[in-house]
Amino acid sequence: MTSAPASSDNYCYRHPGRQSYVLCQRCARTVCPECQVQAAVGVHCVECAARDRQEAPRVKRGRPAILQNLTGSGAPVVTYAIIAVCVVVFLLQFIPGVTQALQFAGAYVIPATGVSFEPWRMLTAVFVHGSILHLLFNMFTLFVFGSALERLLGRGRYLALYLISGFGGSVAVTLLTNPLQPVVGASGAIFGLMGAYFIINRHLGGNSVQLLVLVALNLAYGFLVPGISWQAHVGGLIAGALVALVYVRTRPRRLKTVQVLLVAAVAVALVAITAVRVLV
View (cartoon, rainbow, N blue to C red):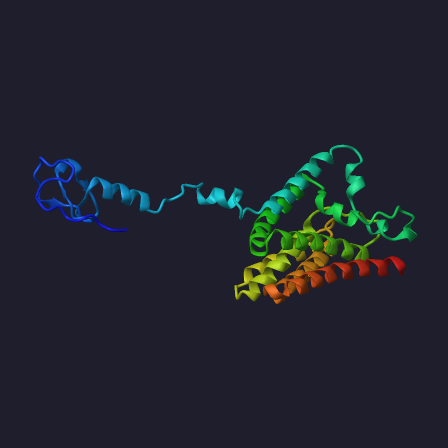
């Protein structure tokens, strides 16, 4: 960009009849008071001021940061979707027979019990809850840990972590409890998220003492209070920690295929454990 030559006299370049001794700081042309535009330093002429406005960086006015976190590209969409599904399923549970159709017990994968073979219940039970307090507590914990992990891992990895954790909880129920005892709830999957958060936090050098205390208290609560499936908690915790260990050990982009194969191997191992239990 070139500057216009300075005026050869002391008259305004736009109004030749008006005498002035003030120069534009950019192009050095003489400007009268009517043609002066106040700048950060000195004054500019009308043309230079217009050019400054065109060249100035424009600030895009978006939504407040808190709304961008909730609804923007970085929003925990999968976490919201899981919460929505759990709420919808809970409402459907007021219809007789819905809970019965979605809950899980080991009997649904062990043919010797005489119950229909319905292994998909190992995942559907993760979206069923026994009471409004059960639902609210699990959804709050899911929102806290799920939102953080989804932003750290991305939606695909996070969804895989959640589903494998929930499946791991059901596998532990099959192995460790009465096959006729039904279980419901997202607790196994949520314990998997807590286990994953611990592994990732430790890998990043964070302090995990408070998380350990939280997990220990919740595990103890499951052991001490009747009516809570501690088996699902333990199974989900182990499965989630294993998946997270795969994630942190295969972070480089060049290991993406290895990561997918190892996560799939964890899922296949859980299926194999269930199959062995079925055949025993």
